[in-house]
Amino acid sequence: MRAILFVGHGSRDPEGNEQVQQFVDRLRPRLSASFHVETSFLEFGRPSISEGIARCVEAGAAEVAVIPLILLPAGHSKLHIPAEIDEAKVRYPHMVFRYGRPIGVHEQTFAILRERLQEIGERPEQPDDGTAVILLGRGGSDPDANSDLYKIARLFWEQTGYALIEPAFMGVTTPSLDDAVRRCLMLGARRIIVLPYFLFTGILIKRLEQQVAQYRLDHPHVSFALADYVGFHPKLIDIVLDRLQEVLDQTVAMNCDVCQYRLHVSHHHHHHHH
Image (cartoon, rainbow, N blue to C red; front, top):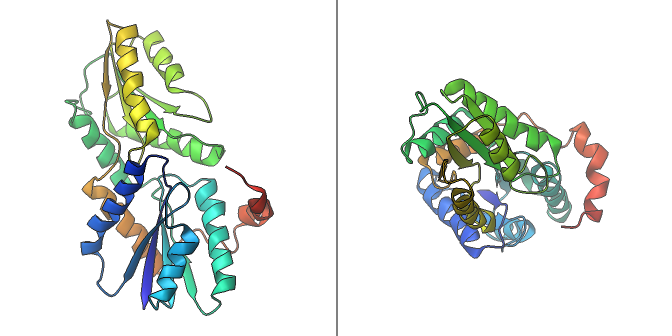
């Protein structure tokens, strides 16, 4: 029997973790009933990855496909999840583990972003002059993941009529949202839309609503709008099913056993603290 273990990032906000569970519940009808399905979290949520794997083993699975519900490849998907899988291989030597890619840059990503703008009354193909979009990511310490947000901003810019699509980050790294708003204002924006590149709600999304309200007060002559995060978009299910299919078809591009990057850094894993 085969199992699928979905791995959410996990949030200090219980509602964010609840949304991960709800998302997996929405995926289930699209999965073969022969799979045993579990959901786990990297941090701030239970079950942990090792607990999730144990549940798959207890259910009688001989093979586990580990699928990260994470937007961009960063330390979590490159190091922390593979380290958990390595420990599980030692604990369950008879088990086969397959590891999927994060959501990453997928053509459906852009369709989701476009619809999130349309929902707040935008026409991405022919926007009003003076409209700027800030694509807001979580931000982290992995330059590769941060650069992916720039890549997505550029590709989305290519597919829309906006003169300005500015990447910005909610934490850890710059440019910050404040930096991006300042830049858009300096370049003459009269309408600024914040488009959060976040999977589910959480403390940062709730803080964002307050921040946008503050911008409206600080800049009364500029119109500010906050679009919805990626969330439960039906196309997100298609992307995750694609990532699962890659694993089941054995066509995964990133083989973590031979990845030079990981061999170089994996010995740091046990010294990592949040």
